Image 1 (cartoon, helix red, strand yellow):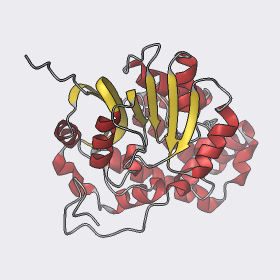
Image 2 (cartoon, rainbow, N blue to C red; image 1 turned 30 degrees about the horizontal axis):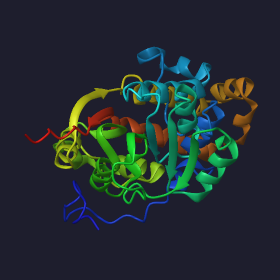
Image 3 (cartoon, rainbow, N blue to C red; image 1 turned 180 degrees about the vertical axis):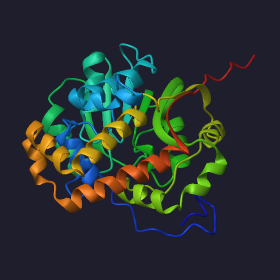
Length: 315
């Protein structure tokens, strides 16, 4: 299973059950349910780019988290420098809103959203496919069904951690990009190659089960594999302080409230839908918060910008 995948060729890695990405975003997942009750948008599946951080992170929950999700898309797309007539591929677009946001920002560009799950593509087409120059297709990030040099820009926002072979995705992205094209990948990554040793810690196993991933690349590994795929690294930005840090602060606040009698009453007064949470749900939430904090110690939330450089003309 791991021998043919960059970063996973380790005999001591145990096989886990095949990934079922849908369970990361449905009612079987207590973390998703908590996010959903905190105005996390169902058409966007990222964690959001937040104003408040550190001790004030809990204030993000008093705002509309869907706005933070939109902000993350806008922040990411801003790095791509999309032109008026560019063709843009949104890989793993989920339920389509990220592609729609790009269309709204650049209405003269042609946007294609691609997702592995037919259910997501159906929702995207239902909600957004009426727009001119915007379309959605079902497809695999590791086998992008478009000809070579079809796009000027490729984006993949907070989805590559689900991919069983990120190296294959980077090679496919390079193939479908035109010379001078750019790729933005927003993803989780181990801080260093050595931090991958925490992949099989009990806490990490719980986070892997919640979000359905096998492994991350490390930050240096992303740079190496992208370079081997032909890309030039334009920039890499650590957004942990604006994404995973604040959302973890919100999780921690909600969990502490939900696991006390007075706190639970306060939550239900603020949002009666929290009545749907049982004692077992709040206990599971506390375990998930502790597990995510463990993984955060060894990982970052990164925005990588790669470029496919033009080949020099032969004299």
